[in-house]
Length: 226
Ligand code: 6GU
Image (cartoon, rainbow, N blue to C red; front, side):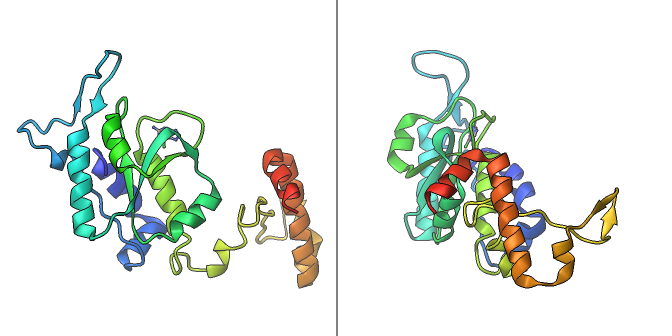
């Protein structure tokens, strides 16, 4: 649900996600909230009660849009409202959302949406990090990308959804490809040897070291969880 449907359409119809949509593995329906206005000017926002800067999105078009989606879908999906006031999106949440059949992403703009419709329909408040964006569209696309890539068949190599950063709470180990030496730097010897157990061990060590250096916060959690 958005006031900028072209932004979502452009962003989602390319690359891996575009292919997943084309092949029917995932379905994306973009609803323009403005299509659910009743007045002839198709007005979606108004001044905030109590004064202050900016405009507030009106409850009515948002609610009518939501009702239309539920009746088309024949179910009552979770509604994720993208807001910097939400819980910060993490990979554990990605896994949880990937199990859902249907999800509605509600994208706000301006100074936000009338609180009353949020109280009525929103089940989850989600932020993508501690910074402020102009609207919920980019965060919704970030979430859809992260979730869709866990849907079976979306990634070519099923393995690549399991061994990457965060899947076990650690960052990914470094990767190398040909040539064996470039810029005066060699590929680590162990990777050229074909000793699978040694390679696995080396990669695990690299993951731990890298996480400790770059993300001490994640490292502490990983250590706690044994
Ligand atoms: Cl979900 N929305 C907006 N507007 N800004 C954000 C955000 C969401 N997450 C981080 N910053």
